[in-house]
Image 1 (tube, rainbow, N blue to C red):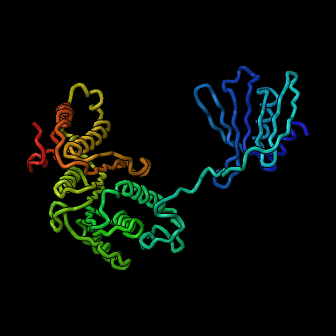
Image 2: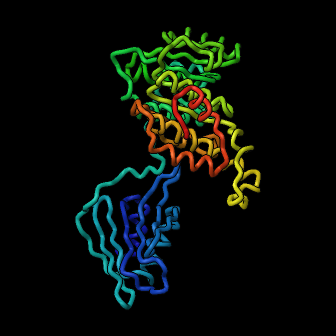
Length: 388
């Protein structure tokens, strides 16, 4: 069998594991070699070509018929060698100066691999596994299949639980963990948090969801009761007025608007919370304060100033938390195509004393912006920190 027929036969039978075209003959080619492998994209069986340049790689996916033509074209003019790793045998194709191809057959050295390009992601809340609260809230059906219109919500819940899982070691399994979710809304994340900590991680928890909407709170309490989620309750109220607990292990605040986020952070600090998870929203406070002539080329554009103000606000919050002893990260919560409000502040208490070494850096930054942050005001007025 000649080289062209061999290539066609291998592609037709789907026996190719990998093919490498090397030893470039055509010096005008910008790439130096090509790696080819089969790939499954949804329901389409294709071949991925990786063109290897000196400083980059470019990928292209081709149908089987296009693949045969592309490989044969390269063997008949562009490359002197092709190494094919197949299911039953390996083949080496060597092309001489007269463009005659010699085929060497060898024993197979590679095993077939998983060619799925869309490998099923391993979630904390698994797909195709029925979950009571997800079924009740309409995210999945009775068989555990995630509904198409709820897939973004499903990913968001799992992303949130991944962040919780990363910090669960800060909780003591020998005591009841007290958690407040401020502005819980319809409480998808609150129910997910309870389900994960109680049913998967096996913690003893008491979770209270707070919201100002009476109908939302009544509905959430109804769901918790019907699911038999003990120690999960919902109350009408504001976090600043909640005083049932003297200490809270974790405070969750998602999309609290403007300085409501600062109020929630201050309350968490007052409770000496071990963990804070906060997704801020509508940061308007600094937008009217920021002023610096050096930054005028940027700040004179309204949308740029708005976005910068949001980033500066979250940076200030994170720095203040670090000053008072929290190890703080700002993470991407969900993809930006779903919402621009995609940053989450995750703070874990690491020490009890104020880190004065960070104060001067913070002061220079906020003075540079001409900013008077509300969270700083709350901390100073309550003698938590001194910014002098």
